[in-house]
Image 1 (cartoon, rainbow over the protein chains, first blue to last red):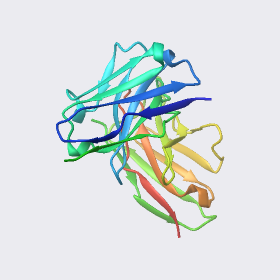
Image 2 (cartoon, helix red, strand yellow):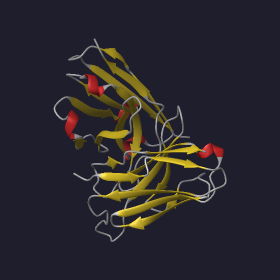
Image 3 (cartoon, rainbow over the protein chains, first blue to last red):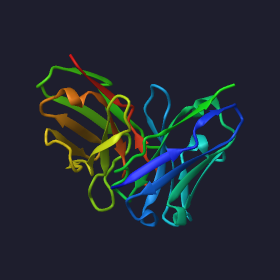
Length: 118
Length: 113
């Protein structure tokens, strides 16, 4: 059974940094692209970033370019999101989700809450 | 950028009655193979999103057959033939054609009248 478990969320001050992790199990992690999707409180879903199978290709939504970095460690079946220069509007639940060419987002984690506030 | 527009944003429905959600794309979602690629997701209160439909009309495993998807190009529809209490939540469309960049619709909140 596929499982995605996020961790690393918490309260951070504006301008601060945080790294989210997502541990995957139940499938061959190195065969799949992976994505991060976020949801601000009471708002809709927003795709944030994705990464290809070996980490050589990465894509980001414009609002996080230059501040967030997606990465992965296939040996550890783990996905990461390094978030720098955090702003109040980055406050959201961040979901890890499995990405597949043309049929993405079939499995989701439970989410990790990031709160940016002073 | 591809913009996805859903309507209505709020959908009160009587139990047992049908429901329909529209999703329109600012750009054609017809891929080079001639097919359109659009997903529908359900998010029940307090839960993570769940994919219901992929590639416009294909139901995911375990999704009741009262859910159906249709459309092509820029216009898509999610239909629920007879709404049940467990269908309460927010429904999102998401364009997939312009991979690897994805865009969601704003969401449609379905509630029971």
